[in-house]
Image 1 (cartoon, rainbow, N blue to C red):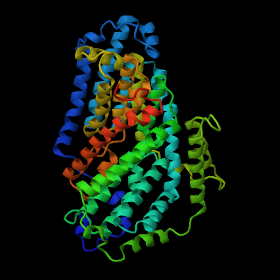
Image 2: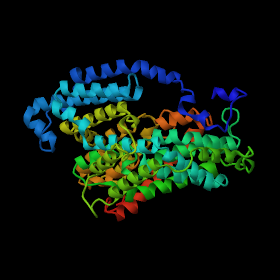
Image 3: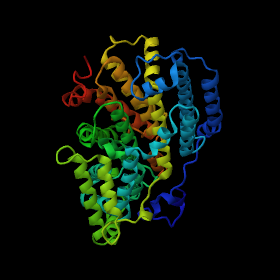
Image 4: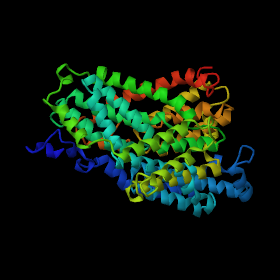
Length: 534
């Protein structure tokens, strides 16, 4: 941060770490070239695949292996027409992936192109393509932002984070554990990982300064750990909750659409213990092995530093009525999500509707006004495009057709051990995060493939789709892998090699833990009836 060179810069002033105060990370030369070449490559790929390519497995597709919407489209269009929409879907899919990865145009604009292309090429009906903006999971996404806005507007989330650090951050070790608790709690309430990063960044940057890490030439292992641990926890803690991110909700939508059943409770019971185990492992690996802290780095370097955090907490004054109401509404929503099937059968989306409606009621009953609500509509449009792409894939049965062809070419058959399929699919989901810039796109690619593989070989759908979905949130290796990663890199507390070293190590360990989880917990819960190795 350039302001640190100024004599007036106060490293303990939280206002110096607001997002608008942080420098924008310039694109690297490689990223700029990707942006320049993205649009021409996407156009060329679409044109070639749609008009010129001759792909044997897309010619003369039979109806015997189709199901659901694909059967209907096949009956409506016939063999030749169904083959053409598969070519169209493949062309749209490849072109959209190129645009999303290269960021040649804004992601939301790519989504609008996707929706339009799917309609114009006849992959699905207009009604089906446009209806995805009203998908129940889309509504759950929107309503989650309404609920999260309560905690931001009332500053209940900031108060909780400050209070926890001030009361429990007595030494370096307890500071790290304090942020673990804070991140996990916020993940239950806030579905936007970037919002969590924006809330926590000023707090952990002041803590880093107290321990002598102000970035740039004043880096130390405490600073590296406090920022990288928060980046890791912000993302991984979201995996513990079905509502932890929009990508989780998309995975649930795809799994339910394929015929399986999963809700908030099932996701929580399988995913939350795993996410906690990975977070604790990440703390140990980071602070004890990769970036071990010297004794002096574990001691405050600025006298009275924690007092400044206490002053920030005191400035907020006593808890306000709106904060109590916001917390009560959210706890009520979480309770109803957790007790579905025990005390009621109201869907997760309807429960979120109830909470949002109560929060928005005027006359002193609610907590926020509509203008206080921060809904990132560009992300909603992006998600709608991703959902429409998923609808197109479902209508054409393209993932299953492509998987069948690829497996036949590679010699993968019913005799192939299950653990090989498990390793390939979970490994692809995990390590693709190093290259992709969107959790949603990884979800949209690999969850349907996992579903298709399970259906092809007669395995329970959840045996492959669920483990793949549980790895969506591992987006922390490089600065461009996620918005929180890009944001926290601007703190200048660590280098690319630092984040790559820690991130890749945790990816490998987390992938290994997924095998253990599949062989034990997911097996006991019935998702992998025979475990991984059978």
